[in-house]
Length: 197
Image (cartoon, rainbow, N blue to C red; front, side, top):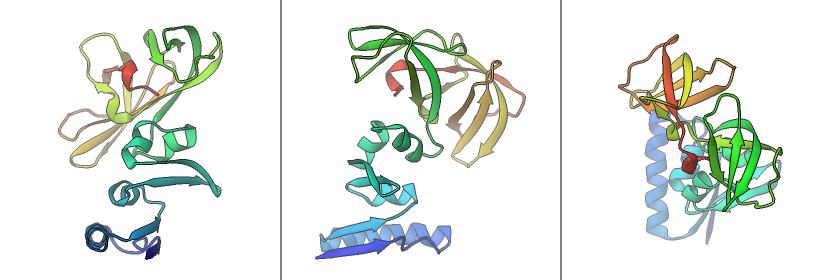
């Protein structure tokens, strides 16, 4: 009635791992049985699961559909664990709060007001702002954050650009693989408050 898998693909090469993921997904569809699959590989978790249980040191951190866990992480551990590259986390200070939004202050960020779940956020409170690398807009015409490229990691279809602001804020940005940049280049990066956590 229940199949238990404990990291079944961890010791095989990448090409075979991809094939085996597809085969396990087909097997699950054909049998319709419950499968509990333990993995540290988030690609396996995101592609195979109907429901993900994120554990940290034996404690459940979040349970949900893969895209819910990715899109609305319940805490800092889940936010930085799910997603590759991991979510950018920025230390900010809370400003005025009104209508479910709180303004955030950081020397490298433009004025920003984001939705908060906790309406009891007080002015001056330290907060963590999260934004996924693929939610940052690269090379905006004006405004945004001025960054200098430190490292470029090309994956083919996607490029991960590690950047730093003049004041030392480090950001990872995911851009299409065909966008040209190199270490030392300066770019403007756009930040959409609706995509922040």
